[in-house]
Length: 141
Image (cartoon, rainbow, N blue to C red; front, side, top):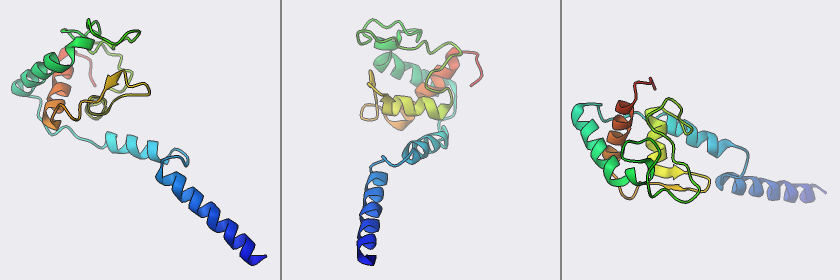
């Protein structure tokens, strides 16, 4: 009987390790992802130059959905989506530098109407967009 239980214990251990490595065991992977994102610090100082660079990148990549003035009224937003107003004090996906950067980098799930820009923008360009977005609103973030 000892071999039987050792076999079952082994199978359960392998199953747990497999699901954990796939992010299926509990919420550990989601928590680690959120913690990692929250730990990001903006390495690009919010200067007039970085804000101008962020504005240029925003106009090139983001205005089609978020609108030229970032109010969420862009003409090419996917059907039945409602891009958020990025100038108000309500931020559905987080308003810290790290949360905004992660949204730009990875996109917004679960349907990913907003695709990530990791392959189109450098980290410096994304951080400059963060600085630009913060400059649009007087709301403290």
